Length: 396
Image (cartoon, rainbow, N blue to C red):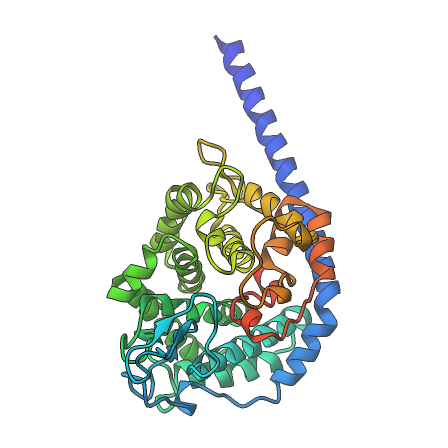
């Protein structure tokens, strides 16, 4: 009996040693990828940061629309795919799926994207150099959006993607705040800097905690949470990012469960595709967008004892299968088997997050090499609004 116990102990120790060695090798490989990613992006990051150092804050209070039902501090936007009805020009707008109306109000979204670009660039530069001048400049913008009572944004998206003469705001509009993700991550990266005011940090985290509460309790927030397509995925991606900043562990735990029991089983087909995205008028762009969001959930939520990167449903669905389905059509878009996107299809793909983070975890050099060959700094507005992760260094 004693010999059996000793043998069991030896086997257990051997297994622990093997697991430890595997984890060390994975960590070493990921560190190597991180070094390579910094090598690819360093010059671009420092150039963006130099631009960001010269920028003044622009928040939602800098512009307004007479069509907004909200106040000065409320984010407002109009749905992209909604147009005047030719049969009733003064009546409710009508939808044309996938076709963006250039006359709709999106100034607040553009301001938020700009804010994201500024903080993302400054946080990335701080990561690379350790120079706290970047933190001090980021705080100027963070205070304007979250602290200063004259210029701050209220922590809700109740009036996002409104439809003229029809809806003052819609649940779909919550997708607009994906551009606060790199703001939250930038704060997470910079928060321990000596020059980051603890008083400001407390207010900023309170803002994000309030927004998480609104996303989980408001009518629009709950509707978006339960959306069956990319809107549900990107709701979770945002909440995961914000919950990580405020260290909301119960929320993070619930999102891990949601990934495994809702998103993978219900959104992914057996071949790794996303049927609800492929049914849209922009199937290529939406497939990319949803995969990016799913991968970011793995990047944000994976824990030592609950690794979403390696999780597989009983019928074989996994994030790796999703990447492997889409990757050939990223390498060669001419092989795409479905109809072309009704608009903007020529601008995809760019340096997609799913490529760089997937390469980082799975050690796939081919995915990494494809990523670095693609457009690392896209400027097309449609692409940018659907690309929340533009500064991968701060996420590694």
